[in-house]
Amino acid sequence: MTCHEVSKLLPAYLEDILSPEEKKSVESHLVSCTLCSRALADLKKAENLVKGLGEVEPPPFFEQRIMARVREEAGQKKGLLRKFFYPLHIKIPIQAVATVLVTVLAFYVYQKSEPEMKHLTPFPVPLSEPRKGQVKAKSPEALIAPSAVTPARRAPAGDLPDKDRQRFAAVPPSENLGKADRVAESPEPKQEERPSDIKPGAPIMMAREKEVPPAGAEGLSKAQDRAGKQEAGKALETLLPEQKRKEKMADTGTTVEESRTMKSAPAPLRFTGVAAKKRSYIDLTIQVRDTDLAIREIEERLKQVNARIIERLHREGREFLKAEIAAQKFAAFLDRLEALGKVDLDKNTLDVPDGKVTVNIKIVTNP
Amino acid sequence: MPEIPDPVDAQNRIIVDDDAGFLARCRQGDTEAFTHLVRRHQKKMLNIAYRMTGDYEEACDVVQEAFLSAYRAIGKFRGEARFSTWLCGIVLNHSRSHMKQRVARSRREGASLDDSFKLGNGNYRSGPCFQEESVVERIEKRELEAKIQECIGSLDGEQREVLVLRDIQGFSYEEIGLTLKLPQGTVRSRLFRARNALKDNLLKVVGDLK
Image 1 (cartoon, rainbow over the protein chains, first blue to last red):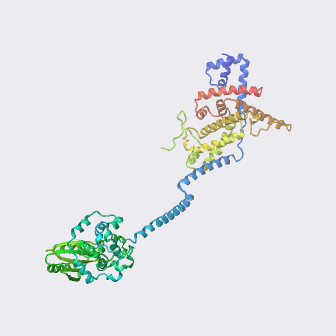
Image 2: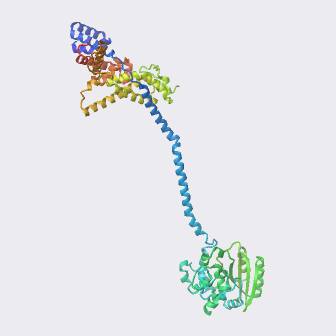
């Protein structure tokens, strides 16, 4: 065994963990080798020196310094937990922001909705689109030249002067019925196109509708607007040439102005809310064989629906009946009336469900 | 069945750890229990760190960081070894990390002429002292210790670890094996090489070993 090999085994020899053979070999070598013996001695001394090293003491407050950092670490952990589960310190800002947001939102919604409400209120509720077509279709016949309407000629609503009635009576009743139907069936023109469509009667229409400011409409009062055929009839007679007037009268078969009032398409849109609540006027013409018999039958049927007969007129071989009937019962009355003869009806676009309807019935003889 | 199994060593023997009670309290968030552990182990850990780093202040930093790491990871400690063994491993890891940083720093800044004075006791004062004999002896002892520490510091890192743990701290081979996660045979052979190397270094530095 060489010195190098022995020197490697010396620490283990000192620990006494060598096998007996190795131990014997080392010991025999140490006896003969002073260098290795000295190395063994140095090894023991070095080990003693290392084991004799003194211990260093921790600096003052070392434990406190360590624990200060540990507690800081623990505090951060707790702080994180608090941030997640007890965010009291950020609750107040959140509440404040939420309050401000709600306030701003409420103000914004109020501001935005206000003009809409303003816009909605003036419009009359009972207006209905489908009837516009009818009205528009017939409007040309019902229009009255406004410029020609003079206050002197206007009659209070509900009254039908004899003069007018005579003129209505003079109109051939069934002459232009077919034409009226055709017009009614024609596609509904747009409102904007109306003035051109109804050219012949446009001025008349203007006169009846107060809101429309045509040249001659200044003299019309609200009462005149509400008025039915008397006022319109006067205007028609006064302002239009005789021939034209007759044509128009013939188209509707009755007083043109009343029919306009009841069903006019532009009228509902232009009427105020008050105007929309007025009583409706419905003109209808019934063709019968026997006028006297028909009158009795009609009166009977009016009574059946609790209608109030306002007046009855006879002019130039034609009978006129004016009655006030509940709007809800009008349909029933109409059904009964149709059993007596052919009925030509001008419906009013202004449906007043809980109101009354004034019905002007013209009875013509149909041989 | 307990939540934390009884710590067992490599031979499946139950390890009795005096720190078990404090550890349980620490796991429940009791910071004061950790104070007891710090108080109990701080000196030993500081000496290991000091012998590993050779610098007192740096050793203090190492120990502080090691305790802090232990506190953070205390929930992961399952008791496979004693707490002191586990903590020693953490101190050694931080010591290695500090030494690497020091080497990197010295490479950047260049070798310092005063490096040799850093070895030894933190309160070490160099220079002659002619006051009293006892003082002279004390200084000579400190100088010798400084040289021994210098020799320890010159050892390879792995050899230094086993030497410090076995010859200075008196750990058993078993504990060293657990701490360094090495077989005991490896620990022995590494230790023997470390002793031979230290002896040779001491002969060079100190001269004749008394």
